Image (cartoon, rainbow, N blue to C red):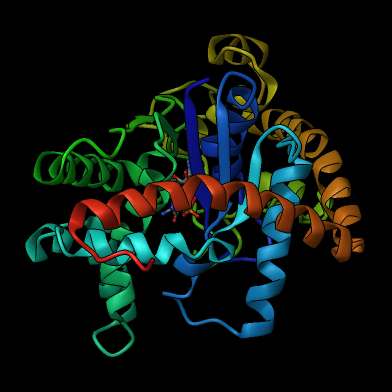
Length: 332
Ligand code: TYM
């Protein structure tokens, strides 16, 4: 089977609906057709300020949400990035073939360092995409399902793989991104031209997978729309309604046109009520399963440890080839 790799940062207590629709739903659907690896990228999360105890909790919560959403740790390899030391080691090796200017062009780095300010930004944020390239390349990955915002990082990953292969000989599979055109970018409900994000300044426009259903329903009822009063998809003129339509279609498996028809001649209130029902019925079982998994952290930790062992055996093989090719003297 071809290899699939993807991951998420444990940067909040809960995933948001953009992570769910943009990534997790694809992961779940693809896991049968691929030899799939899914990581909770805790090393990446260190680039933001974190309380240590909270980071540990968020890491478990993220893993629990993967499983609750349908990733099966007996079929797919679901593990915590820092449990496999080869990630940090390959990142160092790859950093030596990454151009300074090349890393500086990454828009996520530019956005985040501008947001944090010169004092709070850090070298880890700058080398973040190199660590992401290491994640992917260690597993000889064929495909990487992600949302739109990760596209540039995967292009860098491809460039680094090709550069390494041509400099040191064929070592890495060059991965291909899988980006679902319609759902690759879910927008903030209060600010529907900005990407929904786990690190949004205001919570009002973010739908959290683990929130109380009533809270999510309320946020949907308050979502920003427009004054036209017609449920119709038009990204330019009606970003709020269009975003809600995309969420509705993705979760219900329906076409946008059929949803437009259903709400023709009815107001936004009805439409939002319908969407709230769809969201709540999708999230509720995921939330219950995740909370149940988090009741038994010993079992969850055991599953993660077992999966990390599987991941490490693949990763260490690639790392060892890389060290050989680069001319590092191997310990006898
Ligand atoms: P992260 O944790 O920011 O996001 C996890 C996944 O969710 C997608 N996503 C969205 N999709 C649609 N609409 C949105 N509003 C939205 N917000 C987030 C992201 O595109 C991503 O697929 N650097 C990565 C984590 C990472 C990784 C990797 C991914 C580290 N190593 C290796 C793939 C392969 C990140 O910060 O994702």
